[in-house]
Length: 202
Image 1 (cartoon, one colour):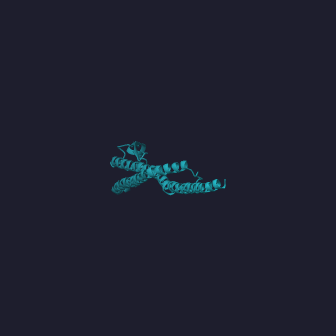
Image 2 (image 1 turned 120 degrees about the vertical axis):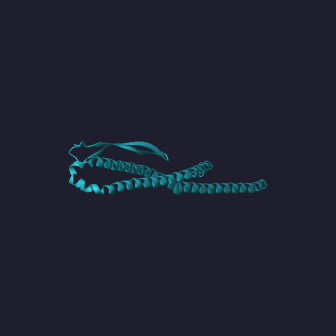
Image 3 (image 1 turned 90 degrees about the horizontal axis):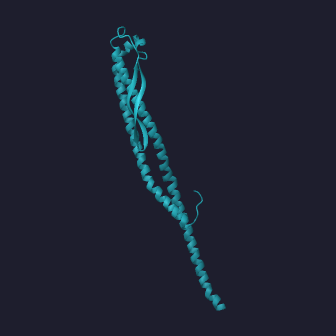
């Protein structure tokens, strides 16, 4: 704790600071809980997207043989050109939101390729879209976890450092002021008790 002045002005400053910290602490604790809840929600959404991707991939099992025999056809069949995102605000944190993807489909000779290529394009596009959506959720989680870390540090600072420091400073100042007042009263009594003696001696 930094050196404090043992004065009434400092006592008022410490009391004001304590009130301020006590007022902000519940807001920070509420924000911390909100961020933790948001992270849990994002994790659940990301898992839901992963589950959809797993289901689609499981459905693709019947294509595995075709992909193996026609690797040149499906290699780089669909590529992501861009990911379209929006923005949202969670507890003061700006985060990206997934909207859609723009894809580029490799040109193939429709007469020289199997009929399943169209289905492969559609399925691959769905998988890529889900992967990009999950990546956006991961970015949301990263940003909110970053804010949660900052908020948690502030909560700990207030709970474990600032509020205890203010309380201790107030205690020390009150004791010092009390001692000073007691000393002043004692000096006054001594001075008063000596006055008649000096008058008598005179």
